[in-house]
Figure (cartoon, rainbow, N blue to C red):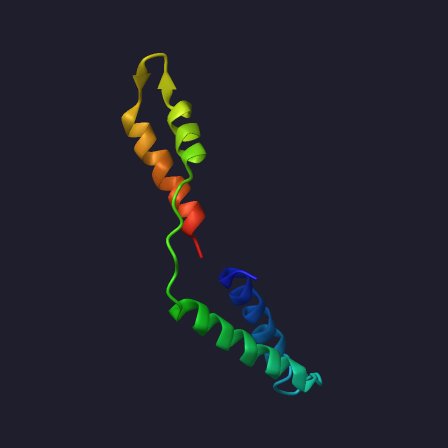
Length: 93
């Protein structure tokens, strides 16, 4: 599960947990508290864990160059932008 998915799940559980407070309280199983605690711990661990950098493979690099090469001309500015986007995609948490 990605960190973003864990954060979304925790947010939903916290919203559900708010329904168990006040006059219109619903009875929630204790597993919800345990699930929220587990998600918080997993998010904290994932946020503090060092991430390994993922590089482009040779095939990926060639494919990106081919996307911006027209005959003998290469659009270097476009190449910089698409390489940046691809690396962000591969290294996103």
